[in-house]
Image 1 (tube, rainbow, N blue to C red):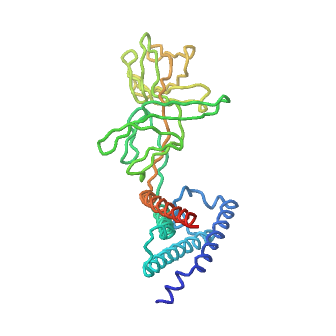
Image 2: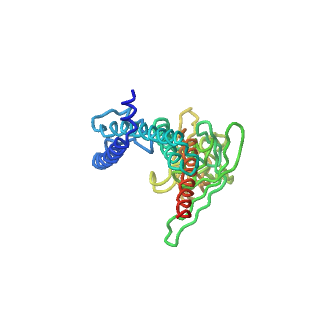
Length: 322
């Protein structure tokens, strides 16, 4: 057992595994670059893809996975051995433990990456507008959308003001590219994928009446009930077109495709109907990412910060004593 312990805490083993990890990462990058069709569906840090799609071409990843585990074990044992030796020799100066604390942060980083790679997930994109939209345990709606652009017309800053409801609690937040909405200390991230203006309703002129209608809403035309079945936008049609459905006297369904504009008016059931306008509202396309390793990331930052501060104090102490 002691021989195994000595081998696993060997610095030479750490150097060898470190170079192996680097080499496998290079090989993996080349394989993924020249065989992108083999990695369709792989996104982010989620490594479960490689376990649900077992293929010989992924051998580099399986070796990398084992090498990283061995690397973590080696780093942990080396750090533990260093702390034990310092404690046995009576080292009481805290700055001398700085490097060991940094190494502890490194080991926690490896564990965080493992947890994040196995258990993180990203849901398919969902459109969110001015009505509450369920994102899977979270509800969100857009209150306002502000955009700014560079002189050449390229977007510079996109900022959506949203309301979020979770567990009956409602709060306001902002979301944009590189500015997700964070929940549960960062474990849940709501990421913005796209933005724009979404058609919310259509304005129909029925005789002398103006009707503001949403999809699936009904209205009357000379006592006949009609329903707004769908709205087609370019490039499906050259111009916006609304699909109306009504029931004839023979109980037969009648479909009418009505393009926008006064000149495209049609007489249906004795009423002149005009597709007058489209009401729009700000909307965003978002996806929810769940990463349970985020709390460990904060722990990693803590250990790295404390360790580096102690290392700096040690360096300053040496400079002063010279």
